Image (cartoon, rainbow, N blue to C red):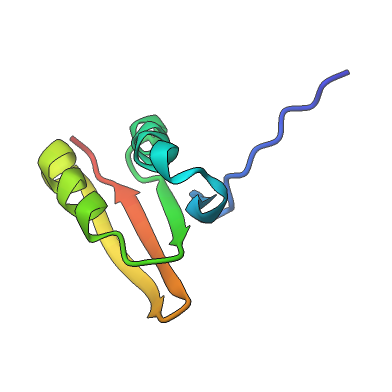
Amino acid sequence: MTIAHNHLRDDRTYPFDARGIAKRFRHAAIFGALDALNPGEAMDFRNDHDPIPLLQQMEQRYGHQVAIEYLERNAAGVLIRFTRRPA
């Protein structure tokens, strides 16, 4: 019997650690994850650097549909919460 594993926490937030994803696939993986979020759900995105180009691409693609909140920002990397807003 297969049991589906749900990574959604009680606060409706999924963890997403980009550090283990090959750099050439990161943006596609991130956009795929963001596209899969329902309104009100969030993704806690961890990365080894501040992803300024990614944030610019997100603004172009999603506009105000995705809220961006830095939870951690230091020399070791960033933790950013992306929250999907209602359309």
